[in-house]
Amino acid sequence: LGFEPNLRERHTCVFFNLEQLGHGGAAVSAAYLKLLRGSAVVDYDTANVAAYCSTPGEVPVVPFLHAPHLADAQAAPLPERPIDLLFFGSMNQRRRAFIERVEACGVSVAQFDQAIYGPERDEYIRQAKAVLNCHFYETSRFEQARVAHCLSLGTPVISERSPATQPGPAFEDAVTWLDDSRFEAFFREEFARPAFFAKASDQLARFAQQDPLEAYADLVGFCRGYREGHARSKTVGEWRALQLNIGSGKDYRPGWLNVDVLARAEPDLVLDLAAPLQLPLRVTTRFGAPLLLEADGLERICASNVLEHVPDLPQLMSNALALLTVGGEFEIEVPYEKALTAWQDPTHLRALNENSWIYYTQWFWYLGWFTHRFEMSASTWLNAQLQPCAKDAAAFMRVVLRKVITTAQERNLARTMRADFGGVDDDVPLAALVTPAAAPAAPRQVALA
Image 1 (spheres, rainbow, N blue to C red):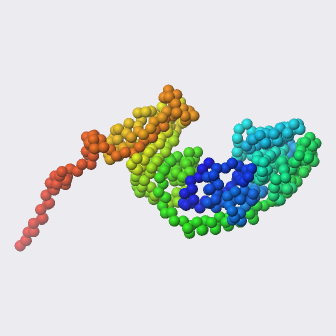
Image 2 (cartoon, one colour):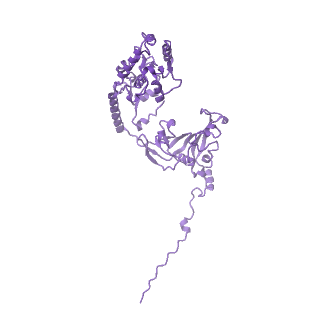
Image 3 (tube, one colour):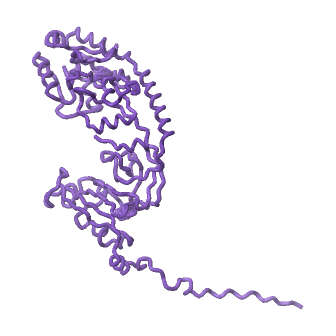
């Protein structure tokens, strides 16, 4: 999906590769392999390592084994579960043919009609008599993460096995293996019979004894050592972010400084840009990086569906103007006031239209601005799918405001509109126009005879 390489300078980054790499494996990008070659990496299968490292011994290999926290004592006994066989994962022609072969034996294979992950997916796994595992690639590399997860949930796994499949010793006696010699016979004569359930229960019990603690301890030691070495060699000082994203959570932008008013959105920095901002600002991000925010320091700010929520929008716009360098751009996306999207969120405070930007681009003096303002760099109507469209079909607006220096004529006009004439000094200091009050006379001393 992409990763900003310079993040490795500010942070101690260790990457865990989950892709099947090498001949016949996943078609990953050149950028991903380059990232792995220049980074600290941990893998789950030694067969992957040669694709990005010439000295395999330098890459820790951590197997997926039993995860006790996934066990559920309330799960139904295997014979009582409503799903016979469950398959989940990416689909290709190879897997489709495998599933069709199973169903030709009279066994139903349940599949999701949409991608489901996390606890919602796990609930279905716990309702299956068994999970069906089929290799995606011709390399037949064992899907260790998927199988270990299902076994830890207490659901047996029936897996394809070819001569190239190398599952590791922990899975040899924990999985029901299928090859061409007994494929049809197994599903027609053995699956879902009492003997199968008895064997599957024994397999789950054996897998529960496979403790990954030793491998994890080695991993923690590797990470600790790498962190100490990284701290000694790190030369980066304060982070001077060039791009700022107002919002986090689903809108998080890697490589940008992501700020949000809500800590639960897990931004890099909890910061309210709708409140007065004292610059320069020196803080530490949530990930421990020292950060310096200075006036005129940012090249780009992005706010996607934020401005309609902000209590003090003029203050936010003033802070954005101060943070951007001349020529820097503020990209804004908001619901269009005449669309249903304008008031669908109960936290919306305002609706916006094409005139909502006039104060920031033309009547800037009303906001106390003088030397700089915004100019409209781009404006686009977007439909509900965020694609460009005509105004009458618009659900959103996207505008790009660029910070510019005000012209002499604009500053002259601003002076006539401001009570202080744009900060022009009085010819005579006010103090000189005020006559100080006469000091009271000193009391007379009278000699008494």
